[in-house]
Length: 372
Image 1 (spheres, rainbow, N blue to C red):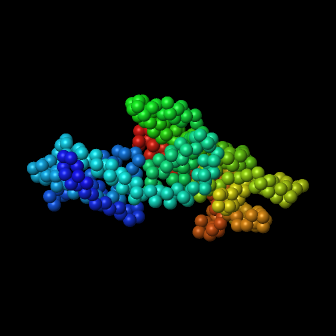
Image 2 (cartoon, rainbow, N blue to C red):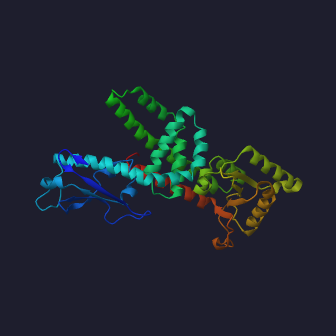
Image 3 (tube, rainbow, N blue to C red):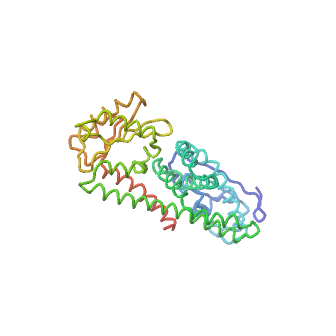
């Protein structure tokens, strides 16, 4: 590549394997065989579309002998206000951004593919005229939070799609549609407003969920709360259960099956012992049986064995079913070391704490970008 004020320039691009950051990440400038100063990011760290974690995995060397007259006397730095350096910087930013997108698009797509069935299901529920905007917003946040754990990405995807239920988006999007390409200032302002709103609504939705968790926490701390009350609160908010269960949903067929099963098994004097069960299914046709115990009840081995019995009775209709047993504090007799691989025992306190931790992390990330 040849730049007007500098002449020939070239870039050598390297991305480290895995997620491990490089000790000397950034772009080094080589002039007449000498490295000038320390590697820098040429302002790419300020670009919201470039994942900060990816920048730490990149080493690039810029060969630009034409900048020899723009270096300081000790060759320790480039004179930043030089016209040549400014032209080179603009070219580097554009070229590097292009290379970065090529380098990590496959990894982002792989992460998204693991959630794609749930994403497609949720997108199908959004009105058609909003669907493309939702998809684009999802692409943006997946890139922004590249490198985070799959559990955190699942939280982000869920919060983003929930946010598209609010009309504030469409007021801003209408302004974007109304702004013509000729009216550059209006168009730019509309796009800026959308970007800010995009993250602000995510933050608002995360805060709404935190408020829900506070209310749920109050509910489970009340000694008079019954299992059916907790069931109603969680059934339509399965995101509370965490990333492993975020793709789960119930439907009329599963609900009818549970109703028929419990009605047949628990009649007469046994009706008072009828369990509170929820059978859910994910897009991969994997099933989860959730049994709700009242928050005042300490979970024990008998509860585990009974939940397994319920599961065994239902297996003939659905095949393999995992179990989640929810209740008050775990009995001292239950050790994590001896849990079944397909049975998870969890207290409401631990469940709420886990969900709060994920959402608080997201709020902090958005706050760091001055969204809050």
